Image 1 (spheres, rainbow, N blue to C red):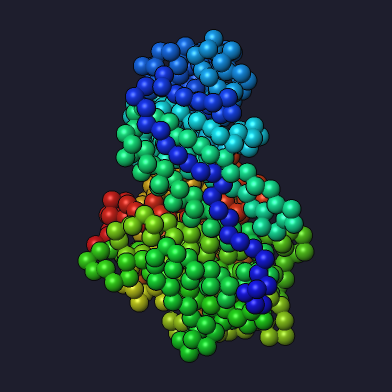
Image 2: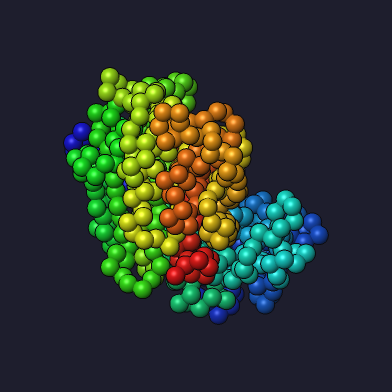
Length: 548
């Protein structure tokens, strides 16, 4: 495949955000072609302006007229045409779109992101090419992280580990809007373009904070768009070598170092797990190493590792035909790591971050690995291949061993590793496993702040025996019980206690918007857990007490 044959362009942001700092919302100036978006809290079954709007009596009176009968429940909405008439001349807008914020118990990152996604849907459905978003009307944070009005999970545990600031809410809401507007249409012969201009209006955030919020939301959305594009591009246009080229382009654009190992380098270094998976394909494998603050001394080092199986047929143990097209997304872990590196560089994260992607294509052929074959991994341990469709752990094992060379404070790997994780957790939560309680806690907190759910699964010592081989050190597949944990147990053999390690199994969350929220459009990748990785890197010293 040549570069000229590639048929796609990466998706640009689908909205232009501008800002307007006002002394009072009574200063809102509009023209008849603009739409006003305002949030309403829910109290005792009625829609009420949030506390932040109480000082704007003229506007709240106008909104009360426009929103008659609206209850303000989370993600509900109403639309009023000809707002000037509905508000007796106090709102000079062609249309007012009211969005339910719900109660303070609904004010947590995932709900705020979904609320932004709901706004995006209203923008698209209403073809609102020009809109004013009153960001102050969404500041409905609880009084404390654990009080009776605070958001809690199904068992009554707090969903927040720290109080949400106005800036936090604004950033998540705008990010949700941008994520909800994402549209993958590179392969459509007739493309449609809808890129609204959204003016973010506030009286409570000063101009500097307002612009900072927009810049961060934009940086995260840009990285998420790139991640989703990589996930959604079909396998014929994104083999391992092209994934490496896209990583190099990203490094040049965002300012991080990229090193690529080709098949000859992989062979000379003994990366036989990656080579074993890729040997059945005409597309050669690659190892991609990305470094942010590569030469910086005296700071912690966080290594992020992504499974990059660019298409997974299952190999000789071939998958059923139904749904196999979705296996173009078996490199979602790699996409999340590459996207995270872009945002980490743009946000000028203070620590050293290394991203490693082990990329291969798993195909059946006369050269493909067979069940029963044995190979020697990068660290010298031997593996018997029982199931060629348990290939992700083979490429990750080499990457986890190689990560030791960076003397990391912590390593997090991301992979669409097991169907068992989908059976256990559905499409709502990623599975989390690892060898260090402090790091697992840090990943949980980072994911909560990012609005991405994770749930910890155990790595009991009893799982190890099922992953030992009678003819080699280990085998890559055991019986059908505890599949997610046994996959992670296999990986842990190659970590071998060398560093604190966490494993995120995103098989159910990376490629399926169902269960994620309105900010994840259908039929494309979700970019989960890219934002969690960025949050962890940004606040690494605060979140992970084991950092140097």
